[in-house]
Length: 405
Image (cartoon, rainbow, N blue to C red):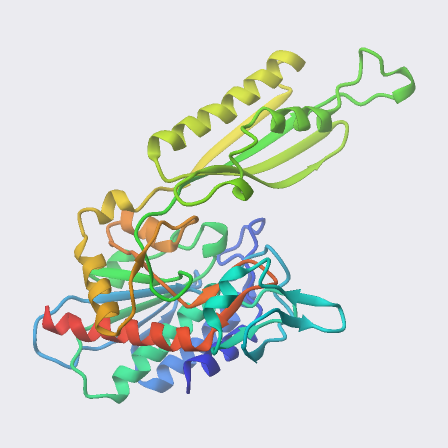
Protein backbone atom coordinates (compact mmCIF):
# COMPACT_ATOMS: atom_id res chain seq x y z
CA UNK A 1 0.00 0.00 0.00
CA UNK A 2 1.30 3.46 -0.87
CA UNK A 3 1.75 5.89 2.03
CA UNK A 4 -0.91 8.29 0.75
CA UNK A 5 -3.40 5.45 0.34
CA UNK A 6 -2.76 4.44 3.94
CA UNK A 7 -3.22 8.04 5.00
CA UNK A 8 -6.55 8.31 3.18
CA UNK A 9 -7.69 5.16 4.95
CA UNK A 10 -6.85 6.71 8.32
CA UNK A 11 -8.53 10.08 7.73
CA UNK A 12 -11.78 8.30 6.96
CA UNK A 13 -11.96 7.70 10.74
CA UNK A 14 -13.10 10.73 12.78
CA UNK A 15 -10.88 10.86 15.89
CA UNK A 16 -11.36 14.22 17.57
CA UNK A 17 -10.35 14.24 21.24
CA UNK A 18 -12.48 16.01 23.84
CA UNK A 19 -10.89 18.22 26.51
CA UNK A 20 -14.08 18.18 28.59
CA UNK A 21 -14.22 14.40 28.77
CA UNK A 22 -13.06 12.62 31.92
CA UNK A 23 -12.59 9.25 30.22
CA UNK A 24 -9.28 7.80 29.02
CA UNK A 25 -9.00 8.09 26.12
CA UNK A 26 -11.29 11.09 25.93
CA UNK A 27 -13.30 9.73 22.97
CA UNK A 28 -14.13 6.17 21.95
CA UNK A 29 -13.72 6.96 18.25
CA UNK A 30 -9.96 7.18 18.71
CA UNK A 31 -10.00 3.54 19.81
CA UNK A 32 -11.89 2.57 16.65
CA UNK A 33 -8.99 3.78 14.49
CA UNK A 34 -6.37 2.28 16.81
CA UNK A 35 -8.07 -1.11 16.58
CA UNK A 36 -7.91 -0.90 12.80
CA UNK A 37 -4.23 0.03 12.90
CA UNK A 38 -3.52 -2.79 15.37
CA UNK A 39 -5.08 -5.29 12.95
CA UNK A 40 -2.96 -3.83 10.15
CA UNK A 41 0.24 -4.11 12.18
CA UNK A 42 -0.51 -7.72 13.11
CA UNK A 43 -1.22 -8.61 9.48
CA UNK A 44 2.16 -7.11 8.55
CA UNK A 45 3.89 -9.39 11.05
CA UNK A 46 4.88 -6.97 13.79
CA UNK A 47 5.38 -8.38 17.27
CA UNK A 48 4.00 -7.35 20.66
CA UNK A 49 1.01 -5.54 19.16
CA UNK A 50 -0.99 -4.29 22.13
CA UNK A 51 -3.78 -1.74 22.47
CA UNK A 52 -3.98 -1.09 26.20
CA UNK A 53 -6.97 0.03 28.23
CA UNK A 54 -5.86 3.68 28.02
CA UNK A 55 -5.88 3.71 24.21
CA UNK A 56 -2.10 3.44 23.65
CA UNK A 57 -1.14 1.17 20.76
CA UNK A 58 2.31 -0.44 21.13
CA UNK A 59 4.15 -2.68 18.65
CA UNK A 60 7.64 -3.97 17.91
CA UNK A 61 9.65 -4.42 14.75
CA UNK A 62 12.22 -7.03 15.88
CA UNK A 63 15.86 -6.57 14.93
CA UNK A 64 17.11 -8.58 11.96
CA UNK A 65 20.79 -8.20 12.83
CA UNK A 66 23.02 -9.47 15.63
CA UNK A 67 24.93 -6.21 15.69
CA UNK A 68 24.38 -4.27 18.87
CA UNK A 69 22.53 -1.04 18.12
CA UNK A 70 20.09 1.27 19.91
CA UNK A 71 16.40 0.55 20.18
CA UNK A 72 14.68 3.46 18.45
CA UNK A 73 11.13 4.51 19.21
CA UNK A 74 8.63 6.05 16.78
CA UNK A 75 5.63 7.94 18.13
CA UNK A 76 2.59 9.62 16.57
CA UNK A 77 -0.90 10.45 17.77
CA UNK A 78 -4.23 9.29 16.39
CA UNK A 79 -6.47 12.10 17.66
CA UNK A 80 -7.27 15.31 15.82
CA UNK A 81 -7.91 18.85 17.01
CA UNK A 82 -11.30 20.20 17.98
CA UNK A 83 -10.47 23.51 16.27
CA UNK A 84 -12.90 22.66 13.48
CA UNK A 85 -15.12 19.78 12.37
CA UNK A 86 -13.54 16.34 11.92
CA UNK A 87 -16.35 14.72 9.91
CA UNK A 88 -17.38 14.00 7.32
CA UNK A 89 -13.95 14.44 5.75
CA UNK A 90 -14.20 14.69 1.98
CA UNK A 91 -10.54 14.35 1.03
CA UNK A 92 -9.45 14.78 -2.56
CA UNK A 93 -6.15 14.89 -4.45
CA UNK A 94 -5.25 18.01 -6.41
CA UNK A 95 -2.52 18.00 -9.06
CA UNK A 96 -1.28 21.43 -8.11
CA UNK A 97 -0.16 23.65 -10.97
CA UNK A 98 -0.09 26.91 -9.06
CA UNK A 99 -2.62 29.55 -8.14
CA UNK A 100 -5.62 29.28 -5.84
CA UNK A 101 -7.26 25.92 -5.11
CA UNK A 102 -11.04 25.58 -5.25
CA UNK A 103 -11.94 23.38 -2.30
CA UNK A 104 -15.68 23.69 -2.57
CA UNK A 105 -17.25 25.23 -5.67
CA UNK A 106 -20.77 25.04 -4.27
CA UNK A 107 -19.85 27.01 -1.15
CA UNK A 108 -17.25 29.19 -2.81
CA UNK A 109 -14.40 28.03 -0.57
CA UNK A 110 -10.90 28.61 -1.96
CA UNK A 111 -7.43 28.13 -0.53
CA UNK A 112 -5.64 31.18 -1.88
CA UNK A 113 -1.98 31.93 -2.43
CA UNK A 114 -2.60 35.35 -0.88
CA UNK A 115 -3.65 33.73 2.38
CA UNK A 116 -1.28 30.74 2.16
CA UNK A 117 1.82 31.80 0.19
CA UNK A 118 3.62 28.52 1.02
CA UNK A 119 1.40 26.89 -1.61
CA UNK A 120 3.89 28.17 -4.16
CA UNK A 121 6.43 25.66 -2.78
CA UNK A 122 4.27 22.78 -4.01
CA UNK A 123 3.81 23.54 -7.70
CA UNK A 124 4.06 20.25 -9.61
CA UNK A 125 3.13 18.15 -6.57
CA UNK A 126 -0.06 16.37 -5.56
CA UNK A 127 -1.86 17.81 -2.57
CA UNK A 128 -4.47 16.10 -0.44
CA UNK A 129 -7.06 18.66 0.68
CA UNK A 130 -10.59 18.70 2.09
CA UNK A 131 -13.76 20.33 0.78
CA UNK A 132 -13.14 23.29 3.09
CA UNK A 133 -15.69 22.28 5.73
CA UNK A 134 -13.49 20.06 7.94
CA UNK A 135 -9.88 19.63 8.88
CA UNK A 136 -7.91 16.94 7.05
CA UNK A 137 -6.20 15.12 9.92
CA UNK A 138 -2.63 15.20 8.61
CA UNK A 139 -1.90 16.21 12.21
CA UNK A 140 -1.09 13.51 12.95
CA UNK A 141 -2.44 10.72 10.75
CA UNK A 142 0.29 11.61 8.27
CA UNK A 143 2.79 10.74 11.02
CA UNK A 144 1.03 7.44 11.70
CA UNK A 145 0.99 6.62 7.98
CA UNK A 146 4.69 7.48 7.60
CA UNK A 147 5.71 5.26 10.51
CA UNK A 148 3.62 2.27 9.40
CA UNK A 149 4.84 2.65 5.81
CA UNK A 150 8.50 2.87 6.83
CA UNK A 151 8.18 -0.24 8.99
CA UNK A 152 6.40 -2.06 6.17
CA UNK A 153 9.30 -1.25 3.85
CA UNK A 154 11.82 -2.66 6.30
CA UNK A 155 9.77 -5.83 6.70
CA UNK A 156 9.79 -6.28 2.93
CA UNK A 157 13.48 -5.49 2.44
CA UNK A 158 16.72 -7.13 3.49
CA UNK A 159 18.09 -3.93 5.01
CA UNK A 160 19.63 -4.64 8.43
CA UNK A 161 17.97 -2.77 11.28
CA UNK A 162 17.82 -2.89 15.03
CA UNK A 163 14.80 -3.23 17.26
CA UNK A 164 12.15 -0.58 16.69
CA UNK A 165 9.39 0.26 19.13
CA UNK A 166 6.20 1.99 17.99
CA UNK A 167 3.51 3.77 19.96
CA UNK A 168 0.44 5.57 18.68
CA UNK A 169 -1.04 7.73 21.42
CA UNK A 170 -4.49 9.20 22.08
CA UNK A 171 -5.40 12.69 23.28
CA UNK A 172 -2.24 14.54 22.23
CA UNK A 173 -4.28 17.49 21.01
CA UNK A 174 -5.70 18.09 24.49
CA UNK A 175 -2.32 17.79 26.20
CA UNK A 176 -2.81 14.28 27.60
CA UNK A 177 -0.90 12.24 25.04
CA UNK A 178 1.88 11.28 27.44
CA UNK A 179 -0.27 10.94 30.57
CA UNK A 180 -0.33 7.14 30.46
CA UNK A 181 2.64 6.44 28.17
CA UNK A 182 4.64 3.59 29.69
CA UNK A 183 8.24 4.65 29.03
CA UNK A 184 9.68 1.60 30.80
CA UNK A 185 7.55 -0.83 28.79
CA UNK A 186 8.31 1.06 25.59
CA UNK A 187 11.98 0.30 26.19
CA UNK A 188 13.52 2.60 23.59
CA UNK A 189 16.89 4.28 24.00
CA UNK A 190 15.54 7.37 22.26
CA UNK A 191 12.63 8.16 19.99
CA UNK A 192 11.16 10.53 17.43
CA UNK A 193 7.67 11.87 17.19
CA UNK A 194 6.58 12.24 13.58
CA UNK A 195 4.30 15.20 14.14
CA UNK A 196 5.83 18.20 12.37
CA UNK A 197 5.08 20.26 9.30
CA UNK A 198 6.75 20.80 5.90
CA UNK A 199 9.40 18.42 4.59
CA UNK A 200 12.79 18.90 6.26
CA UNK A 201 11.52 20.29 9.55
CA UNK A 202 13.44 18.94 12.52
CA UNK A 203 12.48 20.24 15.93
CA UNK A 204 13.80 19.95 19.45
CA UNK A 205 12.65 23.27 20.89
CA UNK A 206 9.04 23.78 21.86
CA UNK A 207 7.02 26.14 23.99
CA UNK A 208 6.84 26.01 27.72
CA UNK A 209 3.09 25.77 28.15
CA UNK A 210 0.41 26.49 30.72
CA UNK A 211 -3.35 26.81 30.77
CA UNK A 212 -5.22 29.54 32.62
CA UNK A 213 -8.90 29.46 33.58
CA UNK A 214 -10.28 32.77 34.83
CA UNK A 215 -13.69 32.82 36.52
CA UNK A 216 -15.52 36.07 37.22
CA UNK A 217 -18.26 36.40 39.85
CA UNK A 218 -20.71 39.24 39.26
CA UNK A 219 -23.96 40.44 40.75
CA UNK A 220 -27.07 40.50 38.56
CA UNK A 221 -29.93 42.87 39.20
CA UNK A 222 -32.64 44.41 37.06
CA UNK A 223 -30.93 46.98 34.82
CA UNK A 224 -33.58 49.52 35.71
CA UNK A 225 -32.38 49.62 39.31
CA UNK A 226 -28.76 48.59 38.78
CA UNK A 227 -26.93 51.81 39.64
CA UNK A 228 -24.10 51.10 42.11
CA UNK A 229 -25.40 47.55 42.58
CA UNK A 230 -24.76 45.55 39.40
CA UNK A 231 -21.39 43.90 38.85
CA UNK A 232 -21.36 42.54 35.30
CA UNK A 233 -19.05 39.52 35.13
CA UNK A 234 -18.79 39.81 31.35
CA UNK A 235 -17.50 43.37 31.61
CA UNK A 236 -14.98 42.25 34.23
CA UNK A 237 -13.78 39.63 31.77
CA UNK A 238 -13.38 42.26 29.06
CA UNK A 239 -11.41 44.47 31.44
CA UNK A 240 -9.22 41.53 32.39
CA UNK A 241 -8.35 40.72 28.79
CA UNK A 242 -7.54 44.39 28.14
CA UNK A 243 -4.92 44.22 30.91
CA UNK A 244 -2.90 41.62 28.94
CA UNK A 245 -0.29 42.76 26.36
CA UNK A 246 -2.20 43.34 23.11
CA UNK A 247 0.81 42.49 20.95
CA UNK A 248 1.48 39.14 22.66
CA UNK A 249 -1.17 37.09 20.86
CA UNK A 250 -0.73 34.35 18.23
CA UNK A 251 -1.74 36.64 15.35
CA UNK A 252 1.12 39.03 16.16
CA UNK A 253 3.95 36.68 17.11
CA UNK A 254 6.30 34.26 15.38
CA UNK A 255 9.49 32.26 15.88
CA UNK A 256 10.54 32.28 19.52
CA UNK A 257 7.98 34.92 20.55
CA UNK A 258 5.49 33.76 23.17
CA UNK A 259 1.85 34.69 23.61
CA UNK A 260 -1.40 34.62 25.54
CA UNK A 261 -4.15 32.95 23.53
CA UNK A 262 -7.81 33.35 24.48
CA UNK A 263 -9.27 29.96 23.55
CA UNK A 264 -12.77 30.15 24.95
CA UNK A 265 -15.15 32.63 26.57
CA UNK A 266 -18.54 32.09 28.14
CA UNK A 267 -20.71 34.10 30.45
CA UNK A 268 -23.61 36.24 31.54
CA UNK A 269 -24.00 39.05 34.02
CA UNK A 270 -23.64 36.79 37.04
CA UNK A 271 -20.77 34.54 35.91
CA UNK A 272 -18.16 34.56 33.16
CA UNK A 273 -15.17 32.42 32.24
CA UNK A 274 -12.15 33.03 30.04
CA UNK A 275 -9.80 30.19 29.09
CA UNK A 276 -6.26 30.96 27.93
CA UNK A 277 -3.14 29.11 26.97
CA UNK A 278 0.20 30.71 27.85
CA UNK A 279 3.27 29.96 25.75
CA UNK A 280 6.94 30.94 25.61
CA UNK A 281 10.15 29.16 24.58
CA UNK A 282 12.18 30.94 27.27
CA UNK A 283 11.46 29.57 30.75
CA UNK A 284 12.09 32.95 32.44
CA UNK A 285 9.74 34.77 30.05
CA UNK A 286 7.22 31.98 30.53
CA UNK A 287 7.26 32.56 34.28
CA UNK A 288 6.92 36.31 33.68
CA UNK A 289 3.80 35.72 31.59
CA UNK A 290 2.23 33.78 34.43
CA UNK A 291 3.01 36.72 36.71
CA UNK A 292 1.39 39.12 34.23
CA UNK A 293 -1.84 37.16 34.17
CA UNK A 294 -1.79 36.89 37.98
CA UNK A 295 -1.32 40.67 38.24
CA UNK A 296 -4.32 41.19 35.95
CA UNK A 297 -6.46 39.02 38.23
CA UNK A 298 -5.28 40.98 41.27
CA UNK A 299 -6.16 44.24 39.52
CA UNK A 300 -9.73 43.07 38.88
CA UNK A 301 -10.12 42.01 42.51
CA UNK A 302 -8.73 45.35 43.68
CA UNK A 303 -11.36 47.20 41.65
CA UNK A 304 -14.39 44.94 42.03
CA UNK A 305 -13.76 43.29 45.38
CA UNK A 306 -11.93 40.19 46.54
CA UNK A 307 -13.35 37.02 44.99
CA UNK A 308 -14.57 38.78 41.86
CA UNK A 309 -11.79 37.14 39.83
CA UNK A 310 -10.52 33.61 40.46
CA UNK A 311 -7.51 32.47 38.49
CA UNK A 312 -6.28 28.89 38.07
CA UNK A 313 -2.99 28.36 36.20
CA UNK A 314 -1.68 24.89 35.42
CA UNK A 315 1.61 24.07 33.70
CA UNK A 316 1.20 21.66 30.78
CA UNK A 317 4.71 20.90 29.49
CA UNK A 318 8.16 22.43 29.17
CA UNK A 319 10.70 23.09 26.43
CA UNK A 320 12.35 19.78 25.54
CA UNK A 321 15.54 21.67 24.62
CA UNK A 322 16.47 21.43 28.30
CA UNK A 323 16.73 17.65 27.80
CA UNK A 324 17.75 17.31 24.16
CA UNK A 325 20.77 19.60 24.65
CA UNK A 326 22.32 16.59 26.40
CA UNK A 327 21.25 14.20 23.62
CA UNK A 328 22.10 16.11 20.46
CA UNK A 329 23.06 12.86 18.73
CA UNK A 330 19.31 12.41 18.11
CA UNK A 331 19.32 15.59 16.05
CA UNK A 332 22.60 14.85 14.26
CA UNK A 333 21.38 11.38 13.24
CA UNK A 334 18.16 12.81 11.82
CA UNK A 335 20.13 15.51 9.98
CA UNK A 336 22.45 12.88 8.52
CA UNK A 337 19.52 10.83 7.25
CA UNK A 338 17.98 13.85 5.57
CA UNK A 339 21.19 15.01 3.95
CA UNK A 340 21.90 11.52 2.60
CA UNK A 341 18.48 11.69 0.93
CA UNK A 342 19.12 15.14 -0.54
CA UNK A 343 16.71 16.82 1.89
CA UNK A 344 17.85 20.02 3.57
CA UNK A 345 17.20 19.87 7.33
CA UNK A 346 15.38 22.90 8.69
CA UNK A 347 15.93 23.05 12.43
CA UNK A 348 13.16 25.25 13.74
CA UNK A 349 11.36 25.85 17.04
CA UNK A 350 7.93 24.32 17.42
CA UNK A 351 5.28 26.93 18.04
CA UNK A 352 3.32 24.34 19.94
CA UNK A 353 4.08 21.07 21.63
CA UNK A 354 4.29 17.36 20.96
CA UNK A 355 4.13 14.20 23.03
CA UNK A 356 7.91 14.24 22.65
CA UNK A 357 8.25 17.27 24.90
CA UNK A 358 6.77 15.48 27.89
CA UNK A 359 8.36 12.16 26.99
CA UNK A 360 11.77 13.83 27.00
CA UNK A 361 11.19 14.95 30.58
CA UNK A 362 9.99 11.42 31.41
CA UNK A 363 13.39 9.98 30.45
CA UNK A 364 12.90 9.30 26.72
CA UNK A 365 14.75 11.85 24.53
CA UNK A 366 12.24 12.48 21.74
CA UNK A 367 12.68 15.25 19.14
CA UNK A 368 10.19 15.80 16.33
CA UNK A 369 10.28 14.96 12.61
CA UNK A 370 8.25 16.46 9.79
CA UNK A 371 5.13 14.94 8.19
CA UNK A 372 4.85 16.99 5.00
CA UNK A 373 1.60 18.67 6.02
CA UNK A 374 0.67 22.31 6.50
CA UNK A 375 -2.11 24.49 7.96
CA UNK A 376 -2.88 22.08 10.78
CA UNK A 377 -6.06 22.56 12.87
CA UNK A 378 -7.65 24.28 9.90
CA UNK A 379 -10.18 23.73 7.13
CA UNK A 380 -7.29 24.63 4.82
CA UNK A 381 -5.00 21.86 6.01
CA UNK A 382 -3.20 19.95 3.27
CA UNK A 383 -0.65 17.20 2.79
CA UNK A 384 1.80 16.79 -0.07
CA UNK A 385 1.90 13.21 -1.32
CA UNK A 386 5.47 13.67 -2.51
CA UNK A 387 6.52 15.07 0.87
CA UNK A 388 4.86 12.19 2.72
CA UNK A 389 6.86 9.75 0.56
CA UNK A 390 10.08 11.52 1.54
CA UNK A 391 9.16 11.44 5.23
CA UNK A 392 8.86 7.66 4.90
CA UNK A 393 12.35 7.71 3.37
CA UNK A 394 13.67 9.75 6.32
CA UNK A 395 12.23 7.41 8.94
CA UNK A 396 13.51 4.35 7.12
CA UNK A 397 17.00 5.85 6.72
CA UNK A 398 17.23 6.76 10.42
CA UNK A 399 16.41 3.16 11.33
CA UNK A 400 18.84 1.64 8.83
CA UNK A 401 21.63 4.02 9.79
CA UNK A 402 21.31 3.02 13.45
CA UNK A 403 23.02 -0.29 12.58
CA UNK A 404 26.04 1.68 11.34
CA UNK A 405 26.43 3.79 14.46
